[in-house]
Amino acid sequence: MVKCADCGYLGVRHIESQCLLAPSEEHRKTGEPTSREPDPKDVEYAQTHISKLAPGATIVDILPVCALGLANCRKECGAVGAQRISPISAKKFMQDKRECGRFRPWIPGLTPKEHMDMKALEEQQSWQREQAAKEAAHHRIELWILGGFVGVCTLISGLCSILAALLQHR
Image 1 (spheres, helix red, strand yellow):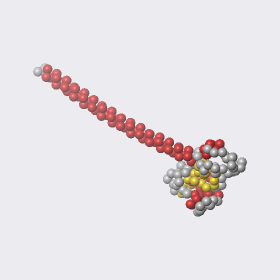
Image 2 (cartoon, one colour):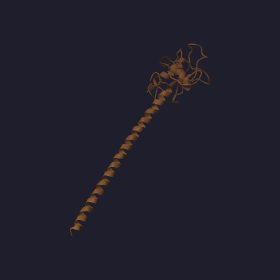
Image 3 (cartoon, rainbow, N blue to C red):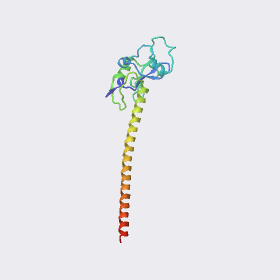
Image 4 (cartoon, rainbow, N blue to C red):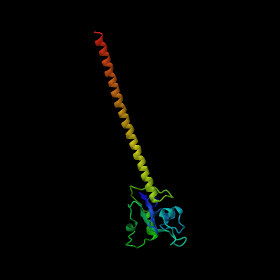
């Protein structure tokens, strides 16, 4: 059993751009987004400026989002339509333990997208290692076959030489 609060795929929407950002550690614990100046990385990732928001305003929505779509906070909290959820509901959603086959431990400072990119890179590297192992096994088989063929050819050549020598001495 795992908690969404501990998962790298947990995200929150940037209010202006709707891009998915990583919730702060405080948001993960309390269910309430922090009022803060945006992290420069968040701004870069969101590809927007927060000019429309007052300085120190909350730049992310309270609603947690599973970047993989495996858990639905709005549905689990009973929110209807555009109804906002409370910090208590958000906290409960993030802190409740649940079964999840795709859980990935949260690495502070990384966005859900970066966690997905990391997972994809790990899967690609794993696939490449498997392919390299299969190729190496295939090459070993080829070498055995080639060695066997050369051995048989050498044996036949040797037998032909012996037969030729025997026929000459008759």
